[in-house]
Image (cartoon, rainbow over all chains, first blue to last red; front, side, top):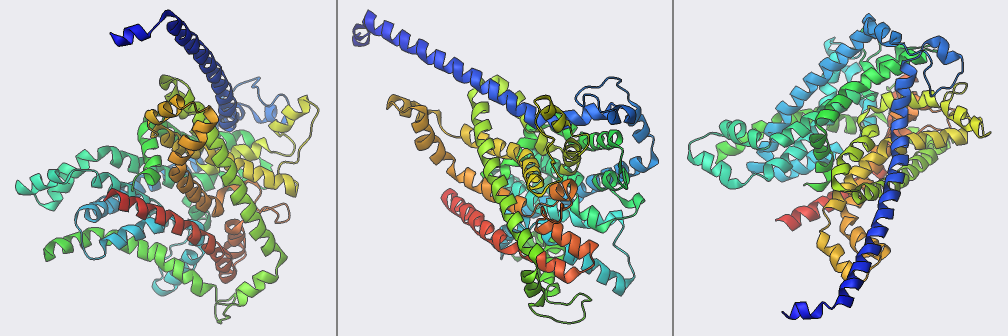
Length: 305
Length: 287
């Protein structure tokens, strides 16, 4: 009753006007936002777009110095050539094999470890969790030289050659993926209510059953995020394969494109761009379909824990 | 009870072995390597480090690594902050699409996108120079001259890294309770005051930790410089990682290469200490 008496016609009009100017400001803010977002989107999407443009050109058109941003005679010749070239397919197969196996190894190591570290307190478990996180902060650029020497020394003692074998990457990539995956899985497991595993224990489940029947299904989003992370890291890694593999049949995609498609000073840009675009496709496709998990994995590292 | 901790230990054993064998041991081993001579037969103590201090290229590498990392992180943070605000501004149903588009540079493997940039920077067919030529500017020697080459590698690093900052800052922006802005609006705060007294204090933690993470990754960066300039022209764009690779793997001087990469440790340690402090503090808040 009293509220109604306060709202005089003048008050209503003023409020209305106020709201209208607010909404005008809001509209302008929105226009500027779209304007700048478009500018940034152009900046961010230009290189992949340019890859696509170049990949559709013939070498003749590229060297003719016509408008580089336009394709006059689009052709899929570069794609056909690369996808039938045994060498490129070898790189692709090596990359795919390495990435898939590394994802499997990573999950087999980090899921049980994260379970133990988040639920079963034991001597040194807290220190170990911190240690895992710290190893994530050690960059591979610090380790490749001593690793190179270690492998050479290992060869001397045991006669097993590790350098220039693609499968040596299966030993090295997990050091890049396991710490982060373990870390985010600890976060996801820790968010599962204790009552759940207590109930399972009560029903006579053992630890393996708790992990496979309770924790993994409940923390599935985290598991997917960690899998995506492990895959993209292994697919993109450049330094280790560059340092440890050299012959053409042992190379993975990033190094393969750079060392084989660039022949001396002759750059076949049409093919390089095609190869790079096809190489960028698997992570992009995964990202397109599982964007929310991808982003959850990205932000989990810093916002959880 | 003893059995439980044994099981737990066994579950973490693969993790411990992996990290001990391929992270911890090489890290310590590189300190040992750094004290040997080139043929790795003789102990030379700090000889490699003293040799490095006398080399002009080395001081250039230190300088360039610092310029590269600091400039890139500052611009990544700025662009990420601004873009996150723009995305946060627009209606919620459009945000997903924009966010999806703007994160693309982070998703493409750096080695692949650097090739695209290398082609955009090509001395004779540069697509940028073609555009600049339309307005009668250029041609710009993107990777040919020391100054421009330094600019180019930083630009590419910003291009790859800014989307990551954007995503982190956007997540932080979303976590600021709407009521705080309403309260500030009622108190008559303008947008600048809302930014300074509501948004920034609420985001401070995530901003700091993202910047520290990025500082580590940028400081240790290898791919971009290696592919775009390979350190050239005349070693002007080398950072620690690429120079260590040049000396240690390509030049065959493993001890000297190990010494070069060890110079990354101090700054990494400082960043790591700050990150760890933050994490411990938040863990303390939670329990």
